[in-house]
Length: 192
Length: 222
Image (cartoon, rainbow over the protein chains, first blue to last red):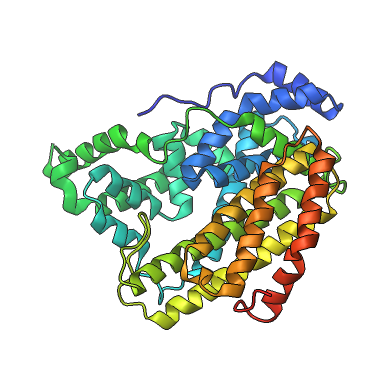
């Protein structure tokens, strides 16, 4: 399992002062808050979007909203957790809109199934795995990416997505089961 | 250990090995570029610039709408060009889908849709350019936007959509104006360069021609 890259989430004392400074209108504090958290938010956005422009847009939107709503931050969770809750919402809603726009412009009648076409064209197992992850429902994919790819704990995922850690575990189990099923015909390759 | 457990374990080991390669982000996070965009979104939207508010960022949402439009636009263009290539018996461009059963009339419709959307976005860009104040952050965003529009203009010029003479003239004039916007220096002589671009717009009448082309259908470029 990858190491947990969610570190920096527990600088409670500094964090409280930093939030207060931002709320007091200190520009440097705003940038400091951004610098502390932007990399992790961007990584998650990029993993989910698979696209630099969308990842940047989701990240920007996350921080725009975070600064707008910082006055609502009560410190019940760490700032990182609070930011990730905003980021998760921005990313999932953003992906929905992108999917809606794409599907409006590419109807099923006009295009063959993208995932199937690509899968047949890509002999490499890693690419097959990537396509199978792409095909997961976004909720499962988010949990899978956060846990198996980025190394978040189920508690962190639960806080960010507003679900119980047990639900996060269940969704991860289902995501893995879907991937295993999707890649079953290649078991000889991934088992070797 | 049963066979099923063994397979399960092997699959988890495979995931542990390979999952981290999924959509691997770049080493360098574009912090400064994103920060500029965040600051710009907050400063250009007085309704949401205050701290502690609860309204979603209207500026951010506007930016996102533009971006999503572009995602769709790019997809439409790429698909349209792939269809056109297949219809003409050429190989599709790398990275696009092969659509061997699509008929010519579908290809033509796709080009018309792509062109129509493109002209609308070009018009939006030039309108914003003409009405926006001199502002370095905004100019940077406009240049980025113009770069995208320029790429798609060139794609259209190289596609069957660029064969119609009047539409081609319009796209070529649009291309020249876009190049000027993209190459504009945000610092040195910004006002002078803006005046030059405005004169180009005036001389070529690109903006009214874009509007006219949309009103009359994409086959008209004049």
